[in-house]
Length: 448
Ligand code: NDP
Image (cartoon, rainbow, N blue to C red; front, side, top):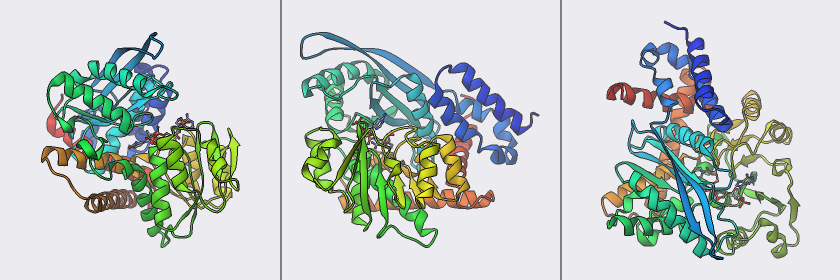
């Protein structure tokens, strides 16, 4: 029998060899696999059945051409992806990302993270992810519609409410999901609401799904602080991004009495000492689809920093809610020096490995994305429940369900980290809880 350390090294080198050039995927796998040694030592059967090796190899990977016509009549060609990562616990579930930087490695890293997150959520869902290298920024509604229709014309044959259930991610929210669902319905001749989540509440979507990822990340921060006898009221916070996750994180932070002084987009960040005005951000981002720079036209006492580093703004609580690797070692050092006590990740893998190391060494309350942002997918699973039973739950009831799920995720991570002698290490707790759920299901289902 190989020793555990050798097995871990072999898994990592296999992943590199099989997936050349996919740096984010390598990073996501390493971050998980390196924390699993204690659980592999305790359960040699996981090694014997090559559970990790199987988890690191997606069950299926689909790549397809997405041709469409722009408003000038010119033909454009994008590349679409859907990766079904693991279906041991339920149908593949995970969002679609439309962003010019998307390639197979992005989707694999997100699908891998998603598999663990979904297991951690305790809901009956497997892990998957998809998207395209399409940039919705600056496109007309008609162009976005034509793109979505073409994308779904291929994707529809691979998805289904019992097979694979996509949702939104960067660049995909209510508008895109509407066009995608419209085309799915048209092609299949079925009003199969449960095939996509994050839909508008007017046509099958769940209340609270739009808010769920941001709210959930704030609930996770609240629980981490509670475990230390502290809370969010009166805390100064910084939230990166100004998209779906960031906006609703800001909303819940403010509702809980925190003061959010900065947010950003990919062009720069705004700092507003008296506290951000959320109504302005919603108007700029959700309605007018403008850059965050315009915020200062409405609030002249705020500052805009083009291409600035948002993590230089002093805060007690930080919520990275933009994108992967947006918070590096230098930023982590700066946050710690400025007195930050908690980081709750709304985005997927926003902190680099060196940044995470610093947070853990400094014993910050650090909630990794796969735990802290699981509220989005958990509420998607609640949307699937409502679609399956043709029911519709109230906002208050659904939010309470989300609150309870986030509390369970927190407590599961906390208890497991403590069992393994690392109290307060949510990275270890999250990875082990999720891995054990996946491993037990995969053992039960045989070698498939
Ligand atoms: P949106 O597209 O709504 O917003 C993304 C925000 O992040 C925008 O403000 C965008 O700015 C900014 N951003 C994107 N890419 C970059 C970049 N390379 N550098 C700097 N800023 C960038 O996406 P979401 O809010 O849905 O997603 C944000 C994060 O949360 C992602 O990591 C996503 O995977 C994760 N997540 C989302 C969930 C959801 O339910 N939506 C669920 C769980 C996780 P700009 O407009 O200038 O590009």
